[in-house]
Image 1 (cartoon, rainbow, N blue to C red):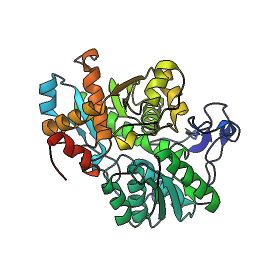
Image 2: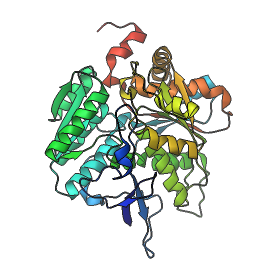
Image 3: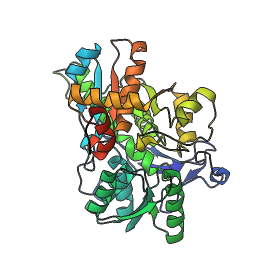
Image 4: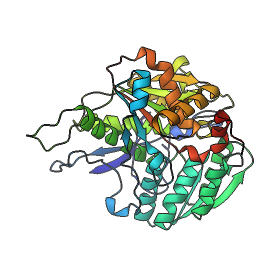
Length: 397
């Protein structure tokens, strides 16, 4: 396949190579307090004689460079007790808590590490609220790469301990994720190491699209009757996907995956994409409603989706508008209540950021026909933040 980076704003194309992150022209518009401009998208073209195996996921790095780690292929749950309680027979849970580091972020880290191995790069740096840091540290351990992470000092202890256990270098930042992002970029530019910063590195979006292929494959297996005459698996896009959203990179990757599925002829429609955000960190949902971003400090216990400025905001907003995406927000109290309900009624313990997606589904449920399929994406294990989980069950730590 022929791969390149393309700027969705101006159409400029670039070679996929080390040191290339943003569009040369659109990137000049960047300034403090606004989402990144010039975020690039990975695009592909098939050679005339090239064929792809049904369901093969097109990715811009060859398979032999990926680290030996079982990333992805996570379960699509049928939560029977939840379905009965909610009268929702077509509710599914996409469980990315069982990735190696306990987070969806392993999908992006895996691709970034493969890129580093392909080009002989031995160090990767990034900023994180915690999950991307522990993820990159985990994948880096398997790949033999040095990982340097910039993490707010307020990040949950479990995520800091993960980073250190995996052998990464932890640089605590006395400030917000946005400050950590800036410090990480300054480090990468000064040293020349590969940046894995979310959105800034286009591969972070591309790696996350893999979940969409798995959802469509597994939903097809669950809902499309098997045909004895065909050995080809059916793929089916759900009617609705609820995605916990902070920077917007997971949402952008999920949309990109379904765009690829449609282009490959494996599905015939796009889902309705729901941006699930905490009220205290809802920049993308607000921009969907108003048409523009406003700078507002974040304030939510759901640390994994807590950002002042969504770095991938402009990129994902364009995709959401193109496909009729919707935004919905919930309070921290609703998040914790939903986390407890999800755990006790399904057996799936997710962290607050993931529970936000379930809380948003509960809020939107009345407007969704009972017959339509719904996938709630759960992107991080509840064991990553037990301090907040303890509040709703009355436990003392």
